[in-house]
Length: 166
Ligand SMILES: [Zn+2]
Image 1 (cartoon, protein in one colour):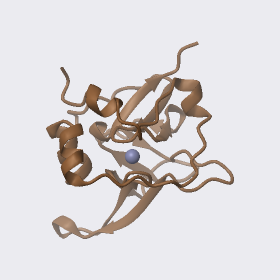
Image 2 (image 1 turned 90 degrees about the vertical axis):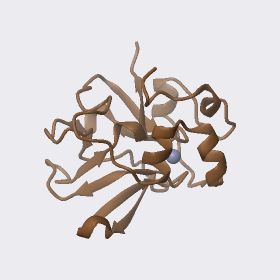
Image 3 (image 1 turned 135 degrees about the vertical axis):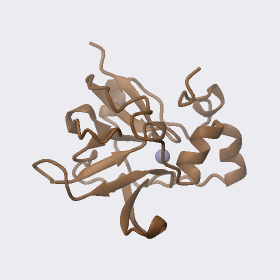
């Protein structure tokens, strides 16, 4: 089993947003936040996901499961199921991490991603987190392509991909 796989235990949680591609695409985020204590996260995530999502870990470049994936679909938060990125926003940054120039943002909707300054490792970076469950996703850098010129550099382990199937 891949270390990034979602455990049955996590998928069976009431808070997890489940659905097929179309349902997830049409999902409306009302701004709700879920709060799970760290002990519980530790039980429902596997060790690798816990390290990345809850301890703000970073997977090594070119090791994750999605940096080379360019199929059509939607990327959801691995920890809570919130739809975050469309494959349309994905580009090949050659960085070794899945990279997106934008996240899903609909009109009349609350932000799905929360940003925070991160001063770790002697750098100033902007951390991006899932706004619903507070899990760490990665960082955003100002060197992406048009139209936003942003690069959301996300750990594969923070995401789960739902492929579009006709
Ligand atoms: Zn989440």
